[in-house]
Image 1 (tube, rainbow, N blue to C red):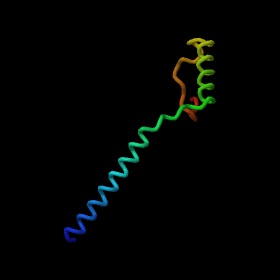
Image 2: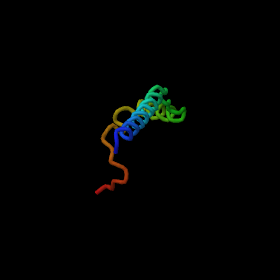
Image 3: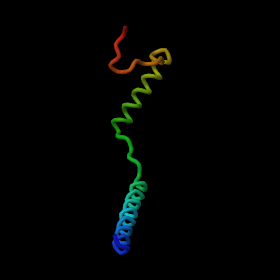
Image 4: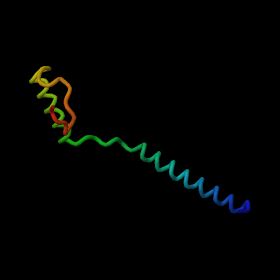
Length: 70
């Protein structure tokens, strides 16, 4: 390849890199997504239940899902 072709390819790669960086900067500036009301309400109910039941109501480690007892 000659120098002219290499220069054009380098410019195109730089343009692509700059466009990619600009898109990432835009995404970084977006506000974070808030959790839904349903999710917050569920978390509040769980916290309330744990507070009412006290520490003895299940403060121990939990078995992973699908685990069978021996």
